[in-house]
Image (cartoon, rainbow, N blue to C red; front, side, top):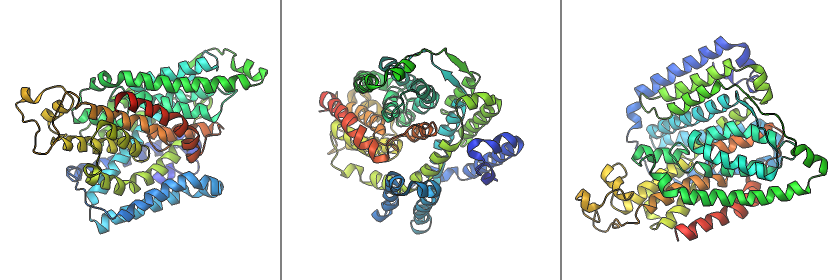
Length: 491
């Protein structure tokens, strides 16, 4: 049944529009099936065993990343027609290994559920945001662009980096339509899709996982707001310099068109209700799959209650989410061995200082899913102090919310472990910022990155390649700024 929805007509929404009952039947049946499967197997998801893996099975992950980076250069036409085959084939190798060699089906089941949760959130936000048309009253001058990106950084903490990215990327592209360049998209990813969301658990998935583990909701903003402000400010400063340079180089007629003030327009405001439903559903943990089904329902309700002319104004189609869903299915599958190796060996990497945790979490979050990377390094930091991340008293000690004397606990907790001091909370601070900030380093560092790229390309924007993104923007812009953060706060 699902193959019908994802047929060739799916990108333009033709099947969705003309076969409403069938689509609802398909998604309803899928919801019932997945709810039944995961409810019956829910016990398998608890306490999943991490079994030592053969290091060779990290190769499919490396090959997939290499394919995403290089194949558009080698043969773009072939890649555009065959990337689903590559993604699924490489993912199948790892799935087969876990099911029939390691006999660890529970690990694959857990990853499957994490993938469904990921694509449900990002897909539902994509659909709902596609039903909100915003035309900003303003000019595409450098200063106005800085204001828009700065506002997006703040909104990322209220709607999440995914929600803010999906809502703001189209108005941002429209505002700059007369002089859009690749760097406009890249800096949007830097600020709105990643760095901006470092203040609250809603902002980015790693922080939400920390919240579920016991980090108080407002703890992170009290510990990182000054670093967030400096980092966002520095990135915006670089953007302003670059944007001003190119703005001054434009021909007079283009500059005049860019400075033209358009009348503001907002349509599809009823979709804000569906947006809030999706964001509220994020906090639902039990029963399993209810959260995802609510997101599907909100997305379908949004799609079918939004007028066609709004979708046309937004140039809305399903191609971006289709590409992300297929590629990330392969990424989620192939990165299982890499994440398992990291969890089993994190404490043996010689990472013992907050600075090392900042860089270690950050570098791996650039290429692996930053949420499990965050949890692995958080567990390692707790283990360094002889503590457990699932113990509320140990959490209070790590966050500096209580002393060992007040809790009547020994310090250190175990022989040979690190003692708790007034600066121990910096480990959690470093891990949190490393996971969120460094997600901006590549297209695959965070879910919204690839979505923004795909939406921009659908709007005929020439985005940089995988390596072009890293070498032209990440290394010369972000890495020096992260060095500044390290020097002043973690050195």
